[in-house]
Length: 239
Image 1 (cartoon, rainbow, N blue to C red):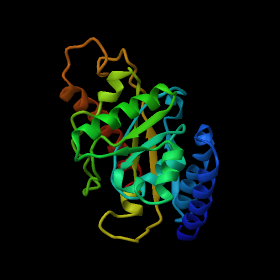
Image 2 (image 1 turned 180 degrees about the vertical axis):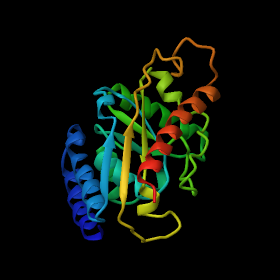
Image 3 (image 1 turned 90 degrees about the horizontal axis):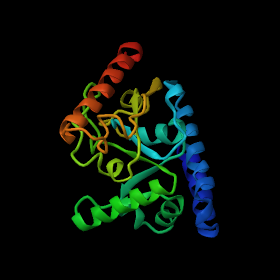
C-alpha cells in the first residue's frame, strides 16, 4: 500500500499541476485505481450487492463511516465517480492541495459558519455540474463497529437545494480490516457494500418532497434502512 500510494501520488500531483481543470474526471481515475489496489493488496475480498439500484445521475451518496480504510473502499468500489469532502487543512498542503482542488474535491471548514455556507454552495454547484458527492452523515467515524451513530442535522440540506436524489450506500467490514484504534494494523477479511434503493425527490423521505415529516424523522428513517442493511451484512460476513 505504501509504495503504491507514493508512486501514484507523485504521478497524480504532477498531472494535476500541468493538465487543465476540464479533465478532472479523467484524473479521478487514478484515485479509483489506487483505492482498488490498496484494498486488494491487503488480500481482502470485496462483495457488492444492490447493483441494480445504481443510477447514472447527479446526487448525494450517504455512507456510514467506521475506519480510515473507508476512503480506499469508497474510491475503489463505490458505484459511479464521486467527489468527497475533506478538511481545509489538507488543501493547505503544498502540491497535495493543488491536486485535491484539480480533482474537484471540496474543502470543508466545520469550525467557521460562513466557510461552511461557502462549502454548501460549492457542493450544490458541483452537483449541478452533473457530479455526485459523498457525505458521511454520522459526521465522524463510529468507534463501535456494531453501532451506526445518529445522523447529523443538516445532512440533507444539499439534497433539498437542488433538489437532488439521495443514494444510500452501506459499508461493512472495514473496521475489521483496519481497526480504528490499531494504527497501521491490517487484517485481511471481507468488505461488503450494499447499494440501497435511491431516494428520489418525490419520496416522502426526501427533504424536497411535499411532506410534513420533519428532518429529524427523515434522517432517522433513512438511518434505520441503512442499519437494517448493515445488520444483514454483519450476520452474513461477521466473525
